[in-house]
Amino acid sequence: MAAVTADGMAQRPGRNPALRALGWFWGVVLLALAGGTGALQYLGPVPPPPAALTATPARPAEPAPALLAATTPARLQAATPTAGLDAAQAAGLIAAPDPALLEPSTAFEGGFLPRLGPGGRASLHVYAALFDATAAAGRPRVAILLSGIGTSQTASEDAIRATPGAISLAMSPYAFRPGPLLAAARAAGHEVLLSLPLEPDRYPIDDPGNKALLTGNPPAVNAQRLEWALTRFAGYAGVTGALGALRGERYGGDAALMDGLLRELAARGLLYIDPRPGSPAPPLATGRSVDVVIDEPAPVRAEIEANLARLEQVARDRGAALGLVSLPRPVTLDRIAAWASTLEQRGFVLAPVSAIVSAPPLGKAK
Image 1 (spheres, rainbow, N blue to C red):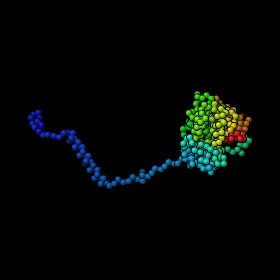
Image 2 (tube, rainbow, N blue to C red; image 1 turned 45 degrees about the horizontal axis):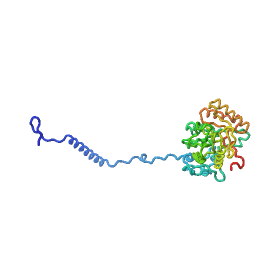
Image 3 (cartoon, rainbow, N blue to C red; image 1 turned 60 degrees about the vertical axis):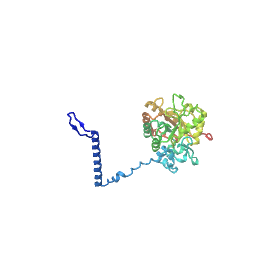
Image 4 (cartoon, rainbow, N blue to C red; image 1 turned 90 degrees about the horizontal axis):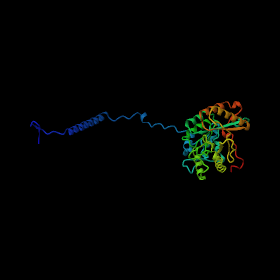
């Protein structure tokens, strides 16, 4: 029925405005699709992109074997073979981890432990820095062990660059990314030791971390924590109780605990450096104790230079001396570099730690 307007005129029924708009919309869409199809038929297929855009991107360069071995234990078989060790050392470099000196850890999947190789080959010799004993004959030997490597990436890189290759480095087992640092240290000729987290005198005020070997731990716990530390990276010549400014005095003072630790290290071909000045040489493993702590009681220029002079005097008196640096601070690195540059003029020779250690008395390490 037709609608009636206010003035009485009849009105033709009309469509809903919303439906009318929807009809226009779909009409436009259909016309556009039809036009697009026609255009594609006219133009033909889209030409392929240039070859340069479709080529497979180049793969990143494979890491060098030394870095690969340090960062990916499962691929240690790709490391430098035994035949290349002598050549690497002759060039003044430290050999990369050798698979013949490693065995899989049973406690930590993907980890490797140092071991004695065929013919009694040991890490303390294979990963030692190059040292010409003949040229050094008759001169006092002075060595420095620089601890705290791995606690700060920037400070560690500075230490590797700023100090002579004869300076030995102690790497923290807690280092976040030890691989690049180890590769750089080897390339610069620095031999590396592993720092063990041993219980210090002021524990728990001074905390060596959640993987520390503690005098109150059950033997099985300490054995597992030692294995954890030894598997953190590969290619180190030995171990030290110096962990930054910590020295592991309480653990080191327990003869029974230390005897067990030293026997394990000796059986794996590692040397041991006792960070407690004046302590006797390790009785059951190749090694020695430090003579002077270079950056104590304060890491300031006057103290550092006085301690370096003390180190020289010990070397004159005993033929060799070992200094310990707790942390790679800028002032310490600067003073050591300056001191080392004139050491030969004063009649001394700068030696790596491995060149001034001694083996335990015959039969003691068994």
